[in-house]
Image (cartoon, rainbow, N blue to C red; front, side, top):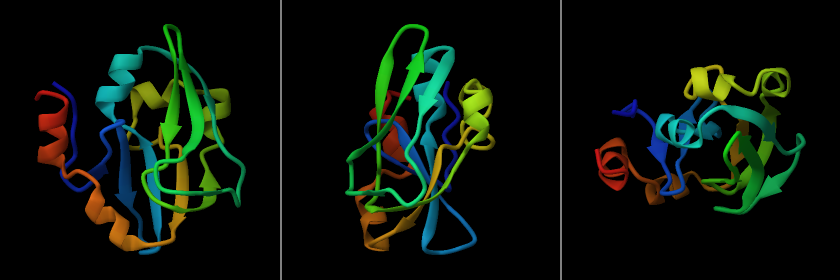
Length: 129
């Protein structure tokens, strides 16, 4: 059974959104379920600081031993921080997807877009748990 924290928001494509102390900035990564499905993550391609994305636009890729998957930006906004630790240790995504394995921090254009994401129970239903 996957770890699905109740305080996060989720996409059907298996990204999560976590609020930060700065109410206009969120942390984004992939879910525990997604990293489990991918298997051993060997490379993560993330955007540069200052990149802007529309809601559900591809912001990078994640490569595992068996597959390469696109990463979708759950909300429109501008990248204000990139987890550079993933360059040297992409397996952080496997070990701690909601902690040290986060991918980007985004300054959100419209906080109301959070309402379009799934809550923990809806996401659990989406993945059949």
